[in-house]
Image (cartoon, rainbow, N blue to C red):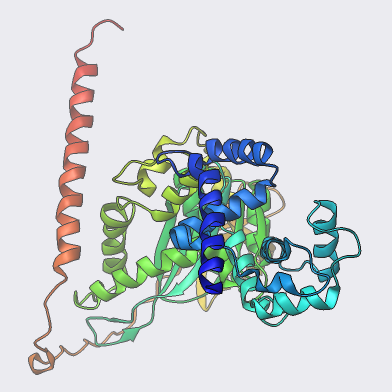
Length: 468
């Protein structure tokens, strides 16, 4: 009989709570409207908005059963208020909201909000109930880490405000001569649209690959406000800092060993893993071919695939998202912030490396084990050389502010033996290519033929226009 009475009381209380939050359960209500309704319901029923939110959350998680309060048995303890179970629930909610809140702070809030008379709640009692509910100090550690991680899921409101960059290990490539080389992927992703500004595989991890990534990104898409990077040696180099400072780009660095803080680029690397799985059956034999396939994959697959992160961003703002979702390409193209391009010469000069060299009597100097021919007129002079580390075929030589002299490598003939052909017996019965990447490439070629035809037709119209 006692159990029936308790159940009846719990059912009545659950029903009362359900009626209270019914307006919030209507479908197709955006988050902004819900906030207004919560405040209105709280005012009409003498509740706090947090309590209304807790009722709504309890119903969404456990339906009607979730609205039932705990047993009244705890209220029979001497000295405890009639609403003790609700006080415990509010204390748990306060701990969830800010996990670092102390017991004393929680008691103070409960007293200020009118849940308990000052001095009624004891620290040891509330601490015991929070611990039993799974909210002790050690028990909260994992929850705190999860909370801190999820709270950093922000998104800049416009493109080119913040860029994330990182390096990832790429696939190993067996070249035609049989030599196997490791590859490394350097990428820059737009924080808002998740659009890839620049991404390319390189055969080494030198600092120059990051500079090259930034260089190409700025040339293709213009100036961006800041970049968020890790503490790898490639990113903290003085040359990269100097180049970005000259272009008005701020470099920001993530905490050491904090992969979660670079969530967008880390999520993108999962897409890279899909590509690597496909490329392994394509028998790519050069970094150039690898990058050609990668460019097509980005254009035809990644940039055209709806991104969950973009949809979540708009849903959190109460904006309806199309059923088909939003792709990085769509979000990039529809952004209202205009791109700001920088003069090509200015960009190139920003990324040039500068060193000093001594010109010998023949007008030459040595650089990275190679001889370069400058000018006999500079024989014996100490000069400044400026070069692009990704293309050292040509180097500029500067002397006392005079017009720069272009230096070329000194060509020395050498004997080169022919490389042996890989025996036919070494070929395996593996797939000859990736049908997925081939299909993307075919679609890529079709689209670019259509673009070329459209440009050609536009030029034809201009040629025939006599109203100039």
